[in-house]
Image (cartoon, helix red, strand yellow):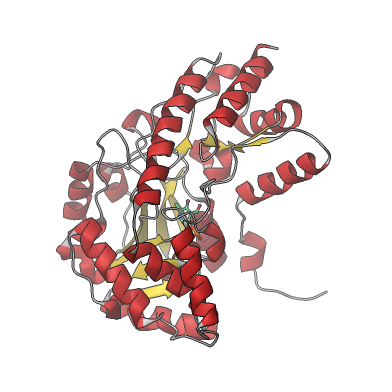
Length: 389
Ligand code: PLP
């Protein structure tokens, strides 16, 4: 019997990948499956971005790049950050990493150990909790409530901070709820954090361009008072439909930067060069496709919310960001995970049960509306038939 570390008895997974595998297997058996399970845009990466990667390969960019990323890529991220937040960030504080997830992996590894407490949103992206548990730190869920528009509450968050708290994870616009935390609440939180200078903050802003109904994303970066302990997680996956390229970036305070750079040297060495050239083209090139994609998500959002609200036992709050709907299914009488499984097996609709995103996800299911309007309508029809059976 091999003896491995206890962390691997605690590490979790992302059930969206398991649902994707099951949906793909069912489709391979000839079943007609509509996949509203996986959180990735159904669009292709815009052509000029793909061309930039091909050109980089043809130009001979085949070798290692610096562990923190090509300077040109970090400069591009600094330009993009200035445009979207109005904040100037030095390329010396930017890391190019292989995907958005890598930033949370690094941040949680840097702060997590037995005796430490890490606050994370529940329901929230499942890897936060998984990685916290892996390190042996105590995961402290911050409740994200439907009655609060799925925004985080500054008051509730601040009340959970103890002397053992090392890291606070925030996410807006949010997965799985589509919640967007208003600026006033973020301001309240930042004000409260002044009393807790021992707490680092990791703000996952990977859906920053995807807000609707005039809602504005408020970046934590716009608060200079916490900059020396703030980590920003962002990346190319969602905004430019680049999930498979594995391209993310993060912004780190001076006191942590060298730690994550060394982690890169010890693990992934660097991000592949052609993807970084693609990333530069994504930021500096035309944004028409991004705008088109967000417009399409906005339209589908209305279709999915109207459709869900027409189903018996289901009520769906209107999500203000990202590309997820998180309807309340308590009145159907089903437990959320069982409902998700039954909908896949019996109705051919792949979606995720809320408990896969945390204890407070019970009573909800997550639908990704990164799929065509036609498929969304077909899925709603199938769900309706299933629920009235
Ligand atoms: N953060 C959130 C909130 C996400 O929803 C996701 C992906 O679904 C990620 C981070 C990870 O992104 P990436 O695919 O770039 O690793």
